Image 1 (cartoon, rainbow, N blue to C red):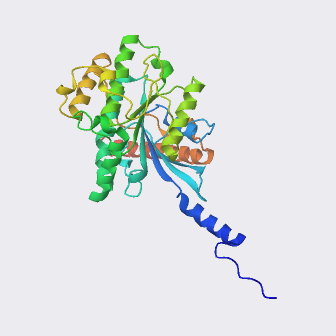
Image 2 (cartoon, helix red, strand yellow):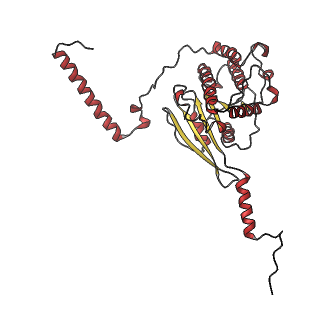
Image 3 (cartoon, rainbow, N blue to C red):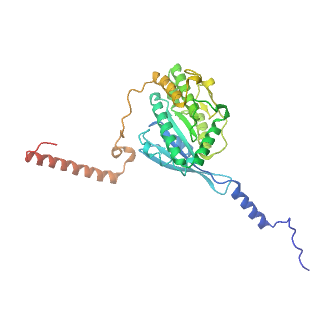
Length: 345
């Protein structure tokens, strides 16, 4: 007896498995983001990266630029990947910014600007450097008008419609998160000065279309919230709802959740013709309390060859041998010049 043909509506287990597999492949592509940590020297960038990667390691000073990567399982068959760059030395090595900011990464790039709250006199130089240099590089990396338009629309969407047309706001081209570290030290400052610094940073974040968070390694609850935020920004997961605008506590203000009316401050929005003049006005307010009289010296203060954090016995012994040979050579040159009656150069 011949077998009856299967109904068109009927699917074999193999057909169902193939269909389900195709659906999973097309349901959600894996996320490949790039995050870039830049900010004050010794501000805690490496500590925050360890927090993001859930690592418990001793941090070492970053000499120039470090690279890390993180993976996170997703609903697709692939894992989400995050490329992590860290710029050391404060703003000394801005010529290395082209590594994380490229045509390939600019559409999925997030900047973490790390400010040391215990050194308020250095904050504005860092903010101005990032606001200027990174903007230029993002514009160059975007290349086509289509990409530039996409980036501008995404920046407006992050900030929200409530701020459209405001002259003092110029949204940063890529997601920007300002993190003030060492809040435990900042908390001991005079209350009035602390209030002014908080308002200055809130307005800086508002005018740049950025998020603002304060962190301290002394408070586990605060660090837990900071890690949630880092994961959100790095892997495009669901945004945390936690917000805190109380200056007596660590600030946590996502992009678009603040306003000039809530911040208050010098002058009114009518006096601010553009973002630059607004930031300049707030900079003057901040610098009046914490003037930056001494500019940081350009160059590395610690010789890496003498740094115990990078101790390598074999290499160090060879280095010492070469140093001895160099000293002998210098002495020989000195004696030869004296013998020949020549003056020192």
